[in-house]
Amino acid sequence: MKILALNCGSSSLKYQLFDWEAKQVVAQGIVERIGIGDSFIKHEAVQLGKSGTIKYAIDNHEVAMQWVINALTTGGGAVLSSMAEISAVGHRVVHGGEKFKKSVLITDDIVNHIAEISHLAPLHNPANLVGIRAARASFPEVPHVAIFDTAFHQTMPACAYMYPVPYEWYKDQSVRRYGFHGTSHLYVSKRAAALLGKDAKECNIITLHIGNGVSCCAIKNGVSIDTSMGFTPLEGAIMGTRCGDIDPAIPMFMMRQLDVGPKYMDSLLNKKSGILGVTGKYTDRRDVEIAAGEGDARCKLAIEIEAYRLRKYLGSYAAALGRVDAVVFTAGVGENSGLIRQKTAEALECLSLELDTEKNMNTRSKNGETEISTPNSKVKVFMIPTNEELVFVEDVVGILKGTYTDHLEYPYTFKNKELM
Ligand code: ADP
Image 1 (cartoon, rainbow, N blue to C red):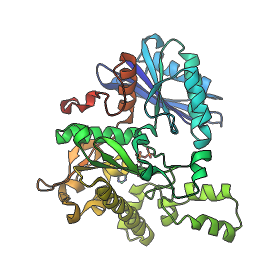
Image 2 (image 1 turned 60 degrees about the horizontal axis):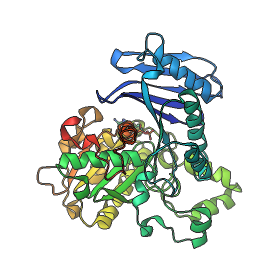
Image 3 (image 1 turned 180 degrees about the horizontal axis):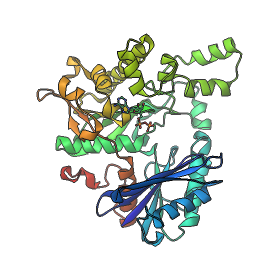
């Protein structure tokens, strides 16, 4: 069974073709700069070991979809004889609001519901919908499934998701914590439970997804009870270009000082802050670490801020959970930066957590899932490469087979330790 996973942005379309029986990615790629000139498609036929880039004027997502079909079925990188080999399509949808608590089969009604909550993610949901419409038009015969970034966090209790602001903001405007990166937190927490040799329902886990975007999650008995991103992905830990937690009075103060409006302030907080704001030049943490090593004071400071704030999340989520079985580092930085992991989790006697310093510093995502705590550490620490696409595929197949109920009950095959 072949499943196509799509992740559609306003000017991009990422795709991955997955072979369910082999549990392998067959091909993947991205169409970039759709409708803004200089567009191109980058395609990789993973198992054939072939890849290539074609530049072409791609004006809209329908044309982009056609290019994906061409790349998958024709030329040297072809991996399908025809698109009829595809059994289903999984679509990443960023915001599911309070409506979507799990993945769903897409119908016209579902498309309308996603459109109704698009104001909650104006940069993402409309683009996701464009992708859904283009793909449904291209593959009308197969089932399409929506997988939401927010769904995993819908189990949070009200004390975690409500903000102490006028209650009408929640009732009338849907202002509350939603959280994002749900498929990643779900995946690595299930894997951590498997590595602990336990059912996810018995485990309390703190997951730290540290990439360009960063979010932390407290998972109690298998379900999310708190997460650091909030109403938008701007809240929480410091990120590549986003500020994360700051005094909410600062934007108002700076708008008055700089005489700028909310739109400009929004872009300053989302695109010019975080690691970029502190260092003044970098978002890529590799650059930051190299410059810090060469003595750049602001790069050193950015590393200290990032790790200190992550450490505070670890502490607060440990208190929220009461008992912690494991801490997981994942995503670009979490998987590859021994330095950030060390500064975040070293000398945490208060949590009975002991990092294996040497193993930690030598662990990268290419090593695969690795335990980086000492044998004595009561709380286990893992580096687990994330695999959001596998969650897509698991959910799609579960829905096709009628075995999917929800995140907790669905018997994800990757529960099996040997599988990975
Ligand atoms: P996103 O999906 O949010 O764009 P990723 O999970 O791909 O982000 O992570 C991107 C980040 O991971 C970049 O800042 C990159 O520098 C960082 N990263 C990748 N490898 C390393 C490394 N070896 N050391 C430090 N940071 C790394």
